[in-house]
Structure formats: structure tokens, C-alpha cells
Image 1 (cartoon, chains in turn cyan, brown):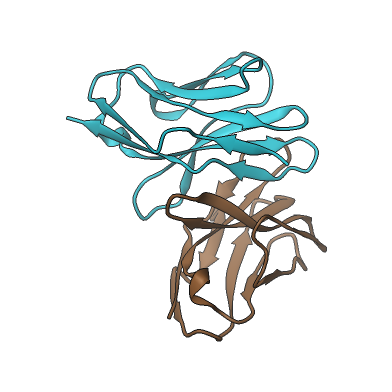
Image 2 (cartoon, each protein chain N blue to C red):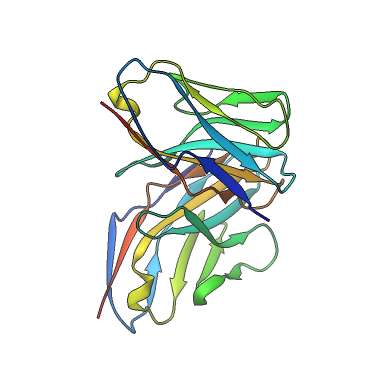
Length: 113
Length: 111
């Protein structure tokens, strides 16, 4: 079964500084990888995905993620964080075979003004 | 285009009561799933479906039933509610290889 690890519970970053949220995954076949964001008392919003192709994927709100097959990682990045980026971020992996989507535990991102 | 619609948004149940959480999507997606979200535990898959008439268990299926009689609807039934089922429940739908689209969630409290 596929699984996702998000090693840090919370990431604190100063406004204007680069933001990185880490994710590693385990899946038996080719991975489909996703990042979602959740604002307080809201549902999950899709940020970006990796299916195939370029290892650097660009998504919504200035976010991007880098797929690294050898390290089985899919870290989320943003060059310059905004206070409005403060939210809960989830990494997810979908197995090509069973199409089930497995989530990590989530990372709380706090951007400090 | 409504996307994924979940009802109700909030519900309080007494221990032992049963209820159905409704989920409907209008995107003709073949895949649908139910997740529960608990603090510090991320989203855990309860049940999922790969098409009408086909369902399967996720990682936390006990105490829940599902059916998929149509492509659009995927209701989640709590058979006999327990305090451990207090959670936020999300329904989601997808096409193959695409990300899932999530509903706005149902916040359930079992007292």
C-alpha cells in the first residue's frame, strides 16, 4: 500500500523568506503525487500535481514542487512566503494500480510577519 | 457546476444513533472516496469506489457502510454512532490520473 511521510509537524518562516514543506512517499508502481492546502474550517484545495514529465512542477499561488525519484521525495516550495500562505499543507500519493489516494499527516505552515 | 456537494455541514448525534452523510458530484467522475480528518492524523481513507456498483474498504472502514448505486452519489452510513467517530468527514471524486476534488466537509460530533 502507498504511504506518505511529512516529517515536520509545523514549519515557521518569516514573510518574504523561501518556504519548503517536505514530503517523501512510498508506492509500488509509478506515483501520481499531489499537494493540497487547507485553510481553517475549509475543505482541501488542489495546489499542484506530478504525473509524468518535468521534475519541477508549477502550481497555484506561486507554489512549485520538485519530484526526485531516487530520493522518493516531492517537496513543496515557494520562493517568497506570504502571511496568507499560513495554512495546513498535505502531500498525497496515488497508486496507478488501485487509484487510492493516501495522505500524509499534514504540515502546519506559519508565516511570521 | 457544483462540484462535490456534501450534506449536512454539521451534525450532532447521540451514541448509538445511525445516520447517512450525503455526497453528490456532477462531474461524471468514476472514482469517489470518503475520508475522515482528525487532528495530527491527516486524512484517512474510510471507503472508496471505482464506479457505480463497486466499492472497497479503506484503512478505517469499521462502523461505516457505503453504496454506489449511481455515478453521482456516494452516501456514507454510520450504523451505530460512537464518540470515536467524532471527526470531520470529506467526500472526494476524481477521474483516473487526476487529483481528487473535495467537498466542503461534514463536522460530526457524537455525544
